[in-house]
Image (cartoon, rainbow, N blue to C red; front, side):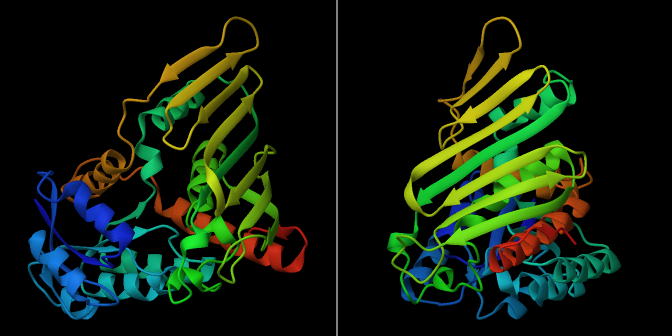
Length: 331
């Protein structure tokens, strides 16, 4: 059983805790802290058997804590990972890893120097629909990969309070890029390999907070394939992930990944129904248990350190392209 501490017990941090606490034989949370130690946060921690600490430093100084989970604002990730690695703690960090390549490399250098393990919160990798699509691509069922199109959108911006860290453009650049688009970027990199350059635009249309809410990105991959990502934070929830190949195309649709279709060049369409597969709790538990399993000597985490750094480089390029209005080479 891996004893973990958590920094950030807000909405998503609690989602991670709830997915495993009392449900997993691989990992449990024994200590936690959050930006605002309100009565509500303390009551939540107490109910979950989590010892409340005044800061991340206190968690890192606790010898009983073997690993730390970071569900904190994006801009803090690099410094927090360096501190955790220096303290000898294994690290699970929520996406994005960091917002630029240099800070990602700095964090990864500290992790390698300390000899600790690192994982990132891309829970969609663990959904059976995505696992099946990935297997099809590895098996060559789609033929030569040509193009990928994806959209991840939800109705978050209208309810973000002005005081929330997500209402800060420095933490939420390009609207849905960091809360949702980064999931698609991770999957694009996993299936299509490294990106070469991007061309992005991000605009403010409807959000109540002063943030962009509508973002689109064109990708040119090093393989020669192309891609498109759309993400919005002020519309009805949507998810669509479509891969085109020389032998047909495959599509995951609906926000909960309930359906996967394969359309070959000839023959009938093949449909797989995942409507009975629980999404958030199951995939979050799967990623945390994969993290714990890796530390215990099991299989490597499916998102590689190289992919973590490369996705941060893509985020940096997308932000730069949206600001300049020009294509940007991925550093």
